[in-house]
Image (cartoon, rainbow, N blue to C red; front, side, top):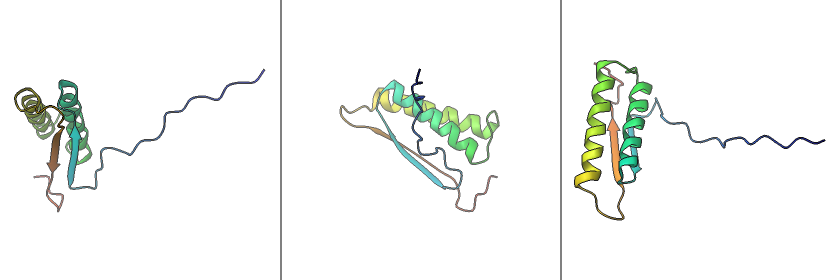
Length: 95
């Protein structure tokens, strides 16, 4: 009896990128898209050195989530995506 090959999930681009100073991504102007924006902001903040549960991380996560939800609730234009842009200082300062 032959065995069928195992299905493997294709490799995706590694997100987040710790070495980049700006994260820009588009998300659908829907509640689901807003949730994804919040999760990606959370992951990127952790990659930049502010770990999950730290005050900076939790603040960024909360602000991005609130802004994304407000954007898709009150500023939605049919057929347009929303954009999230996070940046940190070029020297990597974490103060």
